[in-house]
Image (cartoon, rainbow, N blue to C red; front, side, top):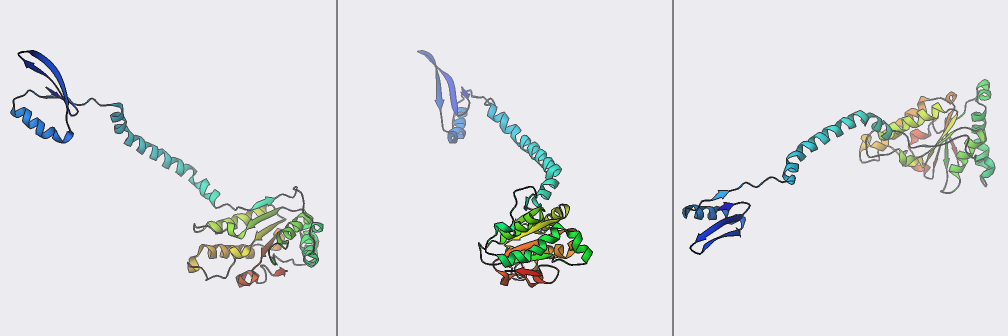
Amino acid sequence: MKDRSNQLTGTIESDDGSFDFVVNYPAEYASDLTKQLKAANVDLEVDAEAPTIFDYLLTFVPYLLIFGLFIFVIMQMQGGGSRVMQFGRSKAKQVSKDAPKVLFSDVAGAEEAVEELHEIKEFLASPQKFRAMGAKIPKGVLLYGPPGTGKTLLARAVAGEAGVPFFSISGSDFVEMFVGVGASRVRDLFEQAKQNAPSIVFIDEIDAVGRHRGAGLGGGHDEREQTLNQLLVELDGFDVKTGVIVIASTNRPDILDPALLRPGRFDRQIV
């Protein structure tokens, strides 16, 4: 009699002859059945089940997983630096000076704002003339007013009239859940602007990143506050000679941090 995979096969011999039989039994009966067969002096041969392809796969799968994990870690280490740098890159959209231009003539109903921005346009178009005169131009211009009043259009018109590159980004694009990403994007934005100087950096809805410090849940370690601190450092770190003018817009000037409005930063405000 043979036992294989909960199945008994054997031959019964009697006076009438012999015949083969096959009996399947539940796995939980295996121990008791073996004892009873041995007690009855039945010759029992247990055949080990031949391994299947699935069994071979189960043997090698752990090694394959470990090898795959090792390759993945190596690839991450090789390309991790570039991916981190890419994650910290600015999301600003650059409007090239060769793109279709928006001019002051395209802005209607904001004559006073256009007149005040003419000075910025003249400086970007002919910076040498202003430097020869010893004139100083504002580093930053804050446009504020209700939504839909043409703040973004005015900023693009300045770049279009002066024929300089225009970098546009939303204040919310600076803030991420990962610490340090916002500050990295601020640095990258100003670096791009300096490389393409003279140029204009336009920060739309700056109140998303420029709110009063100390109001966040994280206190001084709040990511938004770190981003704002970096923005203030960048505004202080370059002068008008670099040819970069920062224009920001908001419809909530009352919630902006006072440090943004100090002289040397957004010291010109246009309604």
